Length: 181
Image 1 (tube, rainbow, N blue to C red):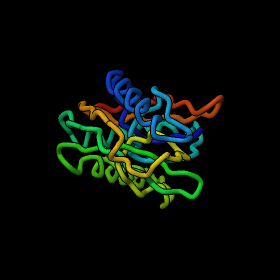
Image 2 (cartoon, helix red, strand yellow; image 1 turned 135 degrees about the vertical axis):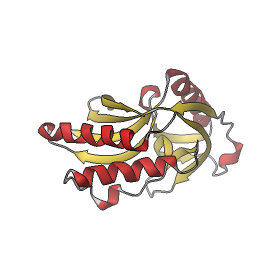
Image 3 (cartoon, one colour; image 1 turned 90 degrees about the vertical axis):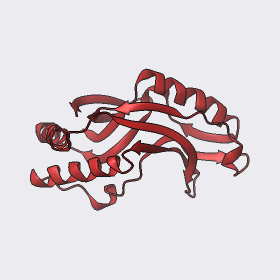
């Protein structure tokens, strides 16, 4: 099974992102765009995991949430950007939080808990940039993202969720375990 840790969004935020995506598409030629129910922020991508090891991944999330002891974290999604790729850009929106670096701290805490459980995540998965992916292989009519109207969305983060990624007629993300702060 293919797993990752994420911040999930309330329905109102997913709806706001879906409405933003309708506006974004007006400025694109093509792309593989994120379905409404798949909007999230990846905290740490794990990759393939044997189902027998799932308990350790859940434990790492629980220990991270318990050790950080966070109050709900204020978050804001806004500001479009791209990760350039030869076959089309990855289009994303930035994620800001209060406190500022809390998502990075959660990422590092998850990695530490996994290491303590003798689980090492591949180094290429440890490059953390908090963002919401809107599309892959996106080609724009013009390169000026500032012309795209984007309505920011605010919400509170109160958990880390272990997710499974499956492929069947597109990608589906299923929550496996939620660890509340």
